[in-house]
Image (cartoon, rainbow, N blue to C red; front, side, top):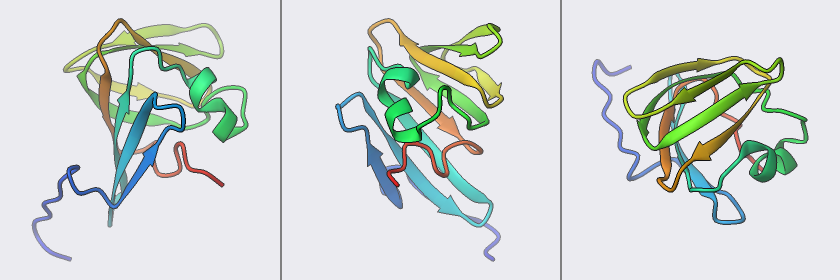
Length: 121
């Protein structure tokens, strides 16, 4: 293992475009696990755009990440809600829906929840 690792999301190991054009996920695979950069376009909502791929009623991935741009609202299955924006760290447990707020795309980095996210079976 090298002492320094430099990778770029401009050359990801995998890109998972959302079929309807509502965004994409770029994935870098590392020894420590997958790291993802998601781009969610205005109008994107997990329950509309990812639920058909996931086959679950709500997102069952845990997310630990950083919001680069845009605004997103997350609603837990129990009704707890939070909004995230640029510069925010986020930790979201499984069992939630999320959607883009406003007309700016959300760009988010996640190092725990995107390994299998939006992956076709």
